[in-house]
Length: 92
Image (cartoon, rainbow, N blue to C red; front, side, top):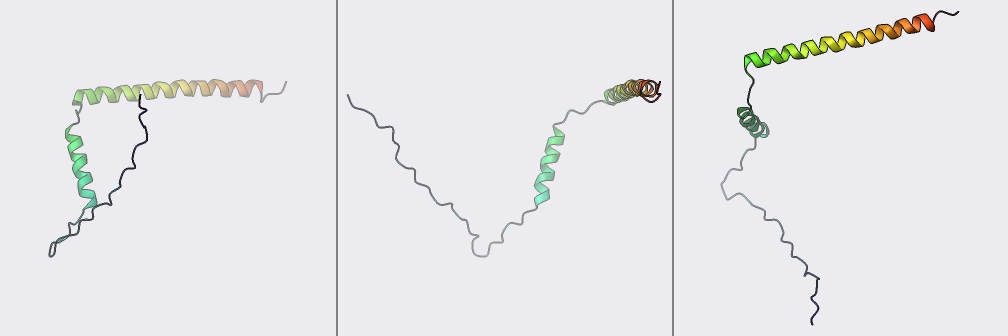
């Protein structure tokens, strides 16, 4: 029975190919913002935008929840302020 070797031969690494422009050919001018703008435009075409009614309703929900949280936190702050005023700032 023969034992198989698990050692692999080393891989040869090829140097990168450098492309040179042909004689008389103008190098391509890269515009860094243009490709990015095209990608943004193509992604925005895929977006499912909400209807006016959905946007209005969700805006109302955000405003209502923000007001409710503000009132709750304001009430808690008022209660703690009165607690500190009554029990800690007035010596007996």
